[in-house]
Amino acid sequence: MKLCILGGGGFRTPYIYQALLHDLGTPRVEHVVLYDVDEERLIAMVRILEEFAEGVANAPTVTATTELTAALEASDFIFSAIRVGGLEGRRCDEHVALDLGVLGQETTGPGGLAYALRTLPVMLDIAQRVKDVAPSAYVLNFSNPAGIITEAMQGVLGDRVLGICDTPSGLGRRAASLLGLDHNRVEIDYIGLNHLGWMRGLIFDGVDRLPELIANDVLLAGLEEGQIFGAEWIRALGLIPNEYLYYYYYNRDAVRAIAQSGKTRGDFLAATQTEFYDRVGEMSAGRSDLWWSTVDRRSASYMAEATGGTQDSPVAHKQYEPDPSHQGYAGVALAVMNAIARNERHTMILNVRNRGAISGLPDDAVVEIPAMVDANGVHPLSVTAPTLHQLGLMSQIKQVERGIIAAATSGSREQAVTAFALHPLVDSVTVARSLVDGYIDAIPEVAAVLTR
Ligand code: G6P
Ligand code: MN
Image (cartoon, rainbow, N blue to C red; front, side, top):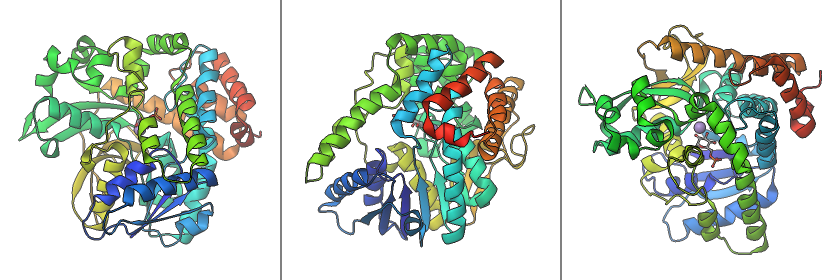
């Protein structure tokens, strides 16, 4: 099979390739094509992947191109991991909001809306191109904000596109392992939108083991989510929220902590990754060691730091774990790809069309819920009804997401202001206006979208 990685010069590509190297089932990916707008990054990345492939029998071949059509043609699967505006754009998403006293974050709150505004036209164009040149390919979208981008792309590609996030399965896996359970045999009862969800149950052999975890302070202290939310709040809710809900439940604390640290996650990544690409560009050989020493933990450690929960340094890097189920995005994406290609039934938490699964949300809304995947595609499973709190928050955010898709499509500044103003983390219409003006001034890719 041919796998196309959009944004292939990005930092997560080695994880995907490593997972492919270890995957020996049939059919498998024999050819990987990396697509990126940055040629130097592509060259650096190809060298790193070649180094990983050294000595591995039947390693997938790797090519790279800056031509989108050539990259997409004849692809069986397309992974999308692009970052429109780069890390500079991310820094602006964060800082414009923080300067106005509201949350500045990659995907949650106004920062995520700015990110969506500039990413939507690019991804809609890619969706159209996929439809033209690779109509039978599946698109697995990790481009953030993944829920919004996937929903917009579904308008072009229907169920051939699905959204992927590592946080729900990561939470389920970590919770299962704390309870000493085999995570492959655990069923996660999860409901939400991307980066806005709740784990309501953890079923093993027909028994929900979540109450046991929630009641146990020692176990909760070993869980990232236990540290950032605190045992008391988890018990008050009676479930474990997705880590990104930290930005809602502890909004003031999060904004204060990020502002006080003076350095956002985007600042940190921009500094380290720029240094990496500069250094790797100067060298003739592949430098996977340099990649290893630069790649690091996800933003959750940032949240934990903000609450004083853990003292994990954001610079400490994750150890590579060869079991594909431990590889975050790469693990989920490969599992989805193989379930489709090999007709191996798997249940995973994915961003898919609701189709009545969550009562109270529209059928064509993209939601993050357990879905069964096989050769026939993706089949959302029915979930028990959300609480009023969950439904209320999801409805509010879904309206905002749809507003931002409409604004990106029409180019209307007014529609954008309305979407920002309706976001629960934007506390005033005047702030919404300032945010949109601020993003137009700071980010050329946003200015280009909001022409009217
Ligand atoms: C998790 C989320 C992603 C997000 C990433 C941020 O993996 O699921 O959606 O992009 O964290 O990681 P970063 O290292 O870029 O802060
Ligand atoms: Mn995610």
